Structures are given as C-alpha cells and as structure tokens.
Image (cartoon, rainbow over all chains, first blue to last red; front, side):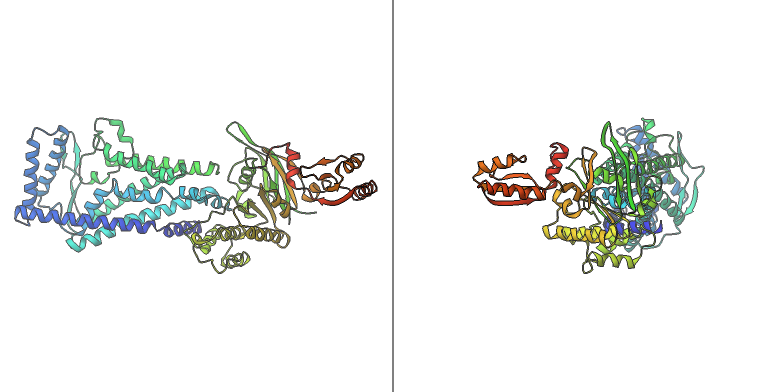
Length: 326
Length: 303
C-alpha cells in the first residue's frame, strides 16, 4: 500500500498541479492583502483616527441607518440587525474583532474561501485523479497488475487526502506569510469571541466565549479541512463516474457555484438544506452569522456533509471495482 | 508434455442483450507464439480485455499459470504481462519513473530488474527522458519492458505492430520470437493482419463474430492448400490437358491455378509438354491466410 501511495504522489507531483495551485493562492492572497490595506487606509482617512472603537462605532451607525431605511427586505434587515448586535457586543466588551495582523487576515481569508475558493482548488486535483487515467488510457496498465482494484483506488484516495491537507496548509502558510509583510506577524493571542447563536429572537449571546485567536484559527482550519475533504471526495466520485475530466470538473463547478447562489436565496425552501453545497460555510457558525436556512446548525451541517462524504466514497469504490474498462 | 500456461474455457460476454463473445476456448503452451486473428469487431479486443481482467466475463473461466483470474486475481496476474492496444504510459514521467511505478505494483521487483528489462529492450540511453519525447517505437519498447518487469509466464500483446514502420515491425517480430524461443514465454498476439500472424505465430485461432472458427498450427492450416500457378501457350490446348486431370482456376491475368501435389504436378507438366504446349512458368504458391480466412468465414470481410 505504501508503494502504491508513493506512486500516486509521484504522479501528482510530476503533474505540477500543486505548484499551480500554490501560485494561484499566492496571487489571490497578495490581491486581498492589498485590498485590505487600502480599506484600512480609507477608513483611517475618513475617520481621521486609528482607533478601532471609533471605526466600529461608525460601522454601527452605518448599520443602524440602513436598517431604518424602508427599502431593504426584512431578511436583510434581520441579518444587519444581528451583525449590529455583534459589533455592539464587541464594543461593550472592549474587544477588537479585527485586530490587525497576519493571523487576523488568515482568519478572514479562510472564512471567505471555505465556500468556493478552497473547494475549487481541491477540485482541480480531485476531479482528474481517476479520470485522467481513463483519458490517457493508462488505466489499462494500472488495473492489469497483480493488485486488487480497491487497493488501487484506496491509494489514490489516500494521496488525495494528502494533497488536500497540503492545499489547506499552503493556503494557511501563504496567507500568513504574504499578509504579514504588510500587517505584521503579531496577533496570535488576540481575543476572539465565539459561540454566538442565532435564534428567532435574534442574536443569542448567552453562550459566547472568549478565546485566543490561535485557538479560533485552529478550529477554522479544522473546518476548512473537513469541507475540503468532503468536496474532494465528491469530485473523486465524479472522477470515477465520468471519464472526461472536463465534464467532471464542470459538474462539480456547477454544484459549487449553485451552492454559493442558493445560500443567498433558499431561506424559504427548507429541504434545500440537505444539499451539500449550501452547508459548506461552516465557519459562519463560529462567528455567529445567520445560516442560509433556518434551523441549520454546525452539527447539522457537519452531519449532512458527513453523509454526502460517505455516499461519495461508497459509490466511488462500488463503481470502480465493478465496472468494465473499455 | 508441454505445459499449458493460459487456459480459456467457454468464455462468454453479454453486453446489454447482445452476446459479444459466444463461448471461446483455447490453450496457450509454454514457449509458443499464439496468434489471435480476426477482422475488426470480431471480439479480439473484448476477449483480450477479459483475459487481463479489465472486463468481467459473463461466464466461462480463465486460468493463468493455473490460477483462476476471478477467484485469485492477484496470483493470476503475477504471471501475466500485457499491452492492451497502445502502451499508454504516463507521458509526464520519465521512462524510468514509469517502470518504477509499475515495479512498485509488483512484489519483489527492484531496481536491478528495471535496468535488466531496460537493457533487454534497448532503451538504456533514453530511459531518463520523459515519455512525451519518445517515438512510437520507443514507447512500444517501453511498453514491453513494463510488461516484462514481473517475469511473466504469459505475455499478451494486442496489435503489437500497430503504427510501427516496417523496420519497427521487423524488430518487434524478432523480439517476440526471441521471447518465446529463448525465454520460454507464451505470447498471445492479436492482429487483423494475416501476414503478420503468418510470419510470427506457431499456432493461430481464427475468430469471427465472437466465436473461434478454427484453431490449428499455422503449418497445418497452410499445407494442403498450396497451389501451382501455370503459364503456357497456346492457352486453350493447355487448359484442355489440365482439365482432363484436375480442376483448374483461371486468373484474370491469363495464368492458370491448380492444386499442388509433388508427384502429380510433375506428371501434368510432362503431359503438357508431350501435347506440344510450351510451359513458360510453373510457380508454387504458399497460400495466404487471407484466402483461408475467406474460405472459413464464407466471406466475412477482413477489413
């Protein structure tokens, strides 16, 4: 088995996909860093101060103004209300929600990339790991060795999980390294509030806890990794089912993007919460953003993803070991 | 007697409702090159894919080195090396890494064996280049190197000379003969080219529409089918003489073809000369499998 995994890693590395992914991530991180830097600068100019309390106060006032405007929907109003309450809570407890520094940037980057960006990168690798063998024809050599088919597939899956872990690590390291050049590398111990929950009455702060940023980041990484594995497994399944890499990627891409769109408009279609793609934004539960559909919780979403993961894995192995290769 | 290395018994494959392979049986002996001859679409490739485990047979059994491929896949495959259609190796890896990749999938095959097979197929100078840069002939040789890695008893080659130039074809043919005669491998070669099989194989199975219509040694199939082509003039008189002793066949180019028999042919010649016909040409012709094939299949065309 070790040797088989070694084989798969050799092929993965020779394809240079990981390098391309690292380059894409570093370009995006550089862009976001610049955007963030500009934003901070603009705020400073506008308010004439560096003090985060003034800035948050200003945000709260903005939000209040928007809520009182009659032109926005009830839904949006509710979300703003929750964000406002959160900001107020931070202000009341004298905690800066966006302590400047690389760890904060990393946190924001992860939170924003968990739904689409990281899954996309994972998909690039996962969706061709089996189908490329088909399109090259090398599957015929691979499956005529004295190795059972499920072992071949397992070695591919294991190397995929390695690659996914590597992608998440690369995203973390690059976002820390690059943004630190601008914002500095401090801020691991900054306090962060977590445990907000949203219910019918609005924001519930009863179970809010104060933790260090590094702890928060660790949990974020765990969730990002979990999402990446689930998306990777589903792409892997498509890669087994669909022989063309492009078609497999297309299907996965459509699913991911529809997830991003659906999250914004399905609040009244309740059964949509069983789709895997509306459950990807796990980090939202950590900082108390309202879920796309009422009644969704962290454990619910993780359970849904887990079920999809299990189905994906089962289908992959079932089909791969059974199907005739032409 | 001779050891049987690959045994196929009553192999069938049904896809959908269509029976693609309708019960094929044959055996491969040690040290022989066995030809698998049939037109495109006769079921050669499907059969070969069943032999190498890519397609699951609907019924029937396949034994390689004494192991049933379905019950004991790993043991059976240890005795098998194969190239199905073109050797599609990983273009982005070097030849060496490709071999390493496949050696990793075999038990107890190390670096020594890799350099051994590299030398055997004559790829030593280019083995560390990427496969992308290889010519088709080199890829074919790397494919064979890959198939030989595990010291198989049976080698299955699907259309091994496809796409090669005449020199490459000749080289491949000599190499396959060498493997069978000197290394004692059983080689199964499929082809739709009759001349190919004729030059390369000891025995041949002729397959058409999913069934084996004949299995025999190439020698047996061809003897008793030799013919003599005559040219003489005056034509009509000569024909008359020959007609009185045998059946004749007139060719478009004015030559006459009859069966061949060592004693009779000489007598006929004497008769012709005595009748005043001057014989300008007597040509003993080895039959080609093409004729044989047409005869056996009743006109199911070859290509």
